[in-house]
Length: 407
Image (cartoon, rainbow, N blue to C red; front, side, top):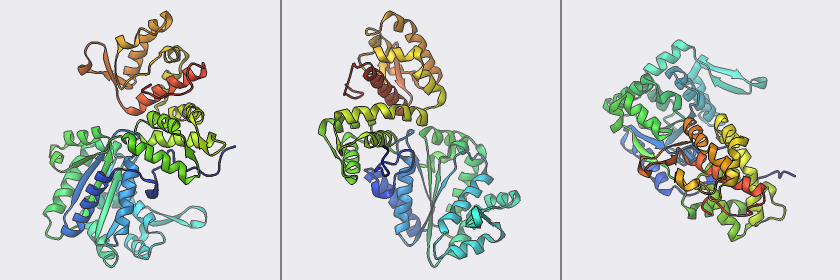
């Protein structure tokens, strides 16, 4: 029977109180927000990392930390699907309106937005920022003055703004956004009147490269802060702490299985941890619980975090037999010749087709450093999912009961 409570939060940013590690990155971002208030100058950073690494969770933590400073107003705006400057402005100010709910300064925000506040939802209990397109165009054009007016209206509560623009994939390929952002930063930096604002862009590393290609001057504007996978020590801390909060103990061997399969990716750690927690029946996580949870998480991870075409290809009968036959998992970088020996004749015949299909889907790419027949995975989610699916397939055939990607 599913449990009513889980210490894990799969598919959602991690609450600040459950955050693990990232002390160096947190301190850099904390200093940037403090510097914006202390100097009155714009601060810009780009928080980057691969999918599932915890970028949004870290951004949420920074907003929470900024919120503890009465001088800072934190706005965390998710821009998934946004491709125009007008839609970006609408999302930002709509988020500000939502953040103000229940605050002492809520009425000041409503007064500042005027007729653009629209009551929505059942019985009109929620609100949205609903400005017409022409007004949004003006808001984009006069973005810096709009932020100054906002701070002027809230001067009794706030002296600076932390603006998090998360999931900028749609905007990163827009020359209009790249040029607007550079102009906005220059306008704020050269203005006589200070504007204490810290802007944190959040996205994949290639999005920063894309912006720099569209507007080369952004190279010196965007301060990159890269999030790397958790080391094993922090992954152990995460699982041990999360299970302990729910009154569960974890046996050492089981803990190592969880650490190995999570691969340092928070998104996988939460999915695996939740699957293990839901399957456990005696508040003690042993190796059987750990492996059963990994097998259960494989389907969830594939359906939630892989592109549908990738998921279908890996799970197809044609290619799954390859995963069932291999005695050792794929390393992040591997050679075709190293994986052929354990394959039977049928699997060997379709192995090159498997590699071509994975390359077409962006799962793997040729690795120039690996020599002839060398490949590397495009990201860790693809790599770890194939390892999990392979181990699950072997487990279903009774060939393994424990182990991880490196065993």
